[in-house]
Length: 423
Image 1: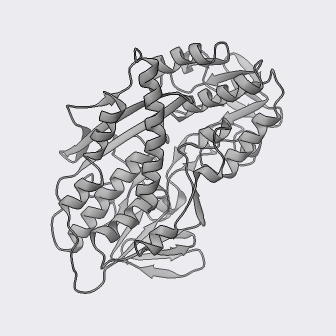
Image 2 (image 1 turned 135 degrees about the vertical axis):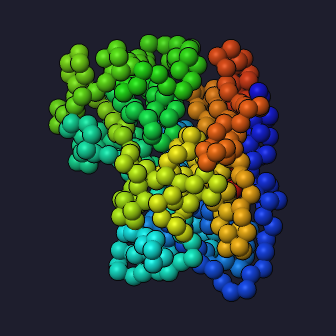
């Protein structure tokens, strides 16, 4: 499937489908919806709630003044983009769509009393709440890796200061240095991300520090697009990247941030720059709200994204469990639209229509080489499953011209999803 057809496939399950299914309505009285978290899921939900029902009072609660996108943060590490290029504001959500913005920290949501509790002690009532908190790094799994160690061995799995830290470490590393990247087990945010990261760091090293190496010590024995990545590494970055799966010595058992070493079954390996991506879970606000399962995620009704443990609370994006979709920006955007449409229907006393979801993930291997996966999902027997029929997967035998077109599509996708999510 060509990049153009992949985009058409996504558009079929995008904004037009949501708006067609749920025309804007007039309501007697004002219903209040609070959205917690201003990433791709939360921003999209707030915007589409107002698009679908302008009478709603929608409040987006977000701690930060601006959002730094994880998509394309690996480009910053390669020197292909700046932090300003991946930083977006919430101004248009407020000025164009009428979303109320509140900069604050949410401690918990009381589903029984329908109250949101803020850090300053304030409580806000709601008719429906959407939690879109992203992920939290787990510092209780890998021996030696805690929040303090992350200041020497950055995870950079939340874009922002950690991204800058990792970039500065790469810039300071001597030519001939060793970069270690340690991807976690799934589920984690954006499963192809560590391998795109290795590719783009290799792009920087090839031009600036060509005697350096990247060692990937993986907690898994396989990863998405593995054959394509490894063939592309041989083409673009020969001799720079080495990957070790879990069963071939890649599983890290401990780290020493002071000595800058990681330990596998074959002993300790020193690195000049060490990027540890730890396992993840849903953030504390969901645990305090009582909507987390024993695996650290939030189970939801796939038709509405409503928590299966507490009524009137919905969860979209990375934190949602029981969803086969990758934890990616497109998944969060798609789930948010479905959730917004379901809330509008339920507030109007209607039963939500059966939804469909779109999921795609682009991985840039070099500035003119990218790959992608695109899927469409539907709900069947209270489960989200992949639909049979058109699907978009990059193939190992694609021509350089097609892969270059895919790289252009990746840039267009990023611009499009930022505009769609943040106005």
